[in-house]
Amino acid sequence: EPEVTQTPSHQVTQMGQEVILRCVPISNHLYFYWYRQILGQKVEFLVSFYNNEISEKSEIFDDQFSVERPDGSNFTLKIRSTKLEDSAMYFCASSECAQGCEQYFGPGTRLTVT
Amino acid sequence: KQEVTQIPAALSVPEGENLVLNCSFTDSAIYNLQWFRQDPGKGLTSLLLIQSSQREQTSGRLNASLDKSSGRSTLYIAASQPGDSATYLCAVITYNFNKFYFGSGTKLNVKP
Picture (cartoon, each protein chain N blue to C red):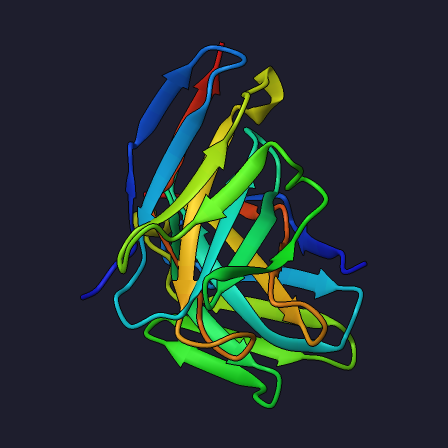
């Protein structure tokens, strides 16, 4: 069964460093998303991406964040200068269509900023 | 802004019990509602998707209902098993935005 994959599973970085989190969505899906979950808190939406551009973003998704689909399979989230409060689990998701379709989530990348 | 609430926050039951998890949302203009399972330190596994025109969906021992007008959904788990122990999350997408709003989850423990 097709699935969303994410790498790495765990990333440790120092404050101020740049990190890139990688995702491979399900191959026939057109809509891509990033969410995050700070330990003990709700899953929060960060950004949605369609047709090579951001379709929506939350107030969390400031200038420190960017997303890219560098080739036909990968979808990346870059955090330019990490802060301690960026420590969280980051989930990638994909879907075939917009609101009416099921979103499939990857296993997540645990980001620890020290 | 859409707010999603799940009650109870935690639930511990003996194996074999039927149980109900509740999800409520403040904005009834939702496009669909999805129930997920999350195991500790792991990702989200989709359980059931209910579109706004539907009232319920079933998969095996799971049945989810949706009442848009009252802003509620329930997830019914029949004959619970220890392997059902996990956190159950509900999430809604509204008509205006293509993003999920998640609840805080119900942490379920099924005792053998």
